[in-house]
Every structure is written in structure tokens, then in C-alpha cells.
Amino acid sequence: MRRIEIIPSKILAELCGQQSGAVRTYFDKSDLIRKLYWKRLEYMLNICSDFAASNVLDLGCGQGVFLPSLSKYYENVFGLDLDVSIAEIIKRKYHLNNITLFKKNIFDNTFQDNTFDLIFAPSVLEHFYDLNLIFSELKRILKKKGRLVFSSPTETILYEIGRKIFGYKKPVDHYHDVFEISNVAKKYFKYINKRNGPFFFIPSICSVYVIYVFEKC
Image (tube, rainbow, N blue to C red; front, side):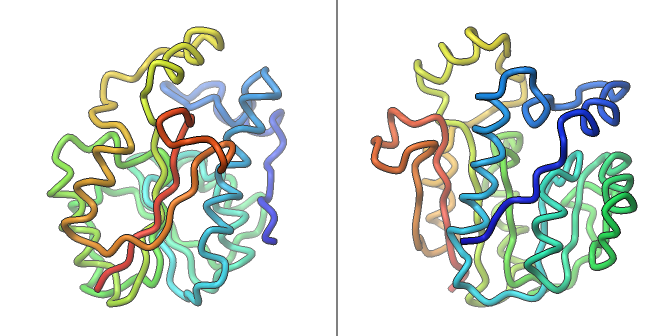
């Protein structure tokens, strides 16, 4: 089983402390929250561990928390986000020489058609109001038989209760839950697999998040 490379909370907190809007889940004071989010990345890493890929995109790479793990298991990794300043520091600190970062909007990218074997999108797609637009672009840059692995919140009443308990508010740009996203994804890609989280044996509707795997036909 592939292991996630965990960046120490102290390092992330120091790097993200001055960044407006930094997502604190990976360095939250709650051990439960941190484990929940790091474990989700590990599940995403492993759900396609038997799939051969050379060129991999971390869509919405944010603070770069996924980059050390992707760098370890894939030959060429690309990270794209509107702000990659902290990701750049993580890249240098961990000597991630096979990582290339782009400070861009996904719709303003310079990627050629059929560029990537594998695209990861953890907690990203719910931020796109027009899902048809983003899936059209992801289909364009994904190779034939390439795979898209994404995860988003279920946004159920249980999820909302969890937010209140741990002091989080739903972001105003969370336009869709993971079920809505997966339904639109089926129009563009072939469904391959899914995993409920954090416990696979709990029904999706009772889960915190769901990880989906789709393939470009």
C-alpha cells in the first residue's frame, strides 16, 4: 500500500499562518481532523495505485500538501492553482525536482490536448459553478484511457453537524456536493470505482466524503 507523505503540522502552520484564506484542515489543532484529511489523500493515492501513469496533474494543488506523495510515486507531476506560493516553498524544502507548478486558472492553461495520464482533484470541483465547463476542459487535457480521481464533501446534515462541532463554516463557493459532481462527470467519463470515507463500509449518504474514479473513453 502506498503511504502518504505527511508534512508536519508545525511547518504547515508556519507557512500558512500569514496566508489569507489558508485551509487549516491539514494542520488543524484537532488530531481527528488532520488524520481525516491526510487519510483521504492516502485513499486517493491508493485507489488507482495499480494504474500506470507518467504525467500527473494535481488540480488545485493549493498549499502543496499532496505534492511530496505524488512526487514519490509518479515521474512527472504538475500542480496548478491560482496561488502556488506555499506549494513553491514545499517543492524547494522537500527537493521535489519532478514537480512543475503553474500559477494559473485551469481555463487559462497552456496544456496540449491529451497531456495527462492521471488527474487528481481533492476538494476542488465543488468550487466550480459550471461543472460542464470544467469537465469539458479536464476531458480535453486527459489522455484516452486516462483517469480522473476526485473527492468532495457529501454536504449531508451529518457533514454540517461536523462543521459546527469543529468550528468550520461552509465556504460560499461550495456550489455542489459530491453526488451532484459525480452525476455530471458521468456525462463526460466512464465510471470506474468509488470509495466512501472515512469508512468504506458506511453508505455514501452517511459518509463525510466520497472518492470517485472516472476514465476517459
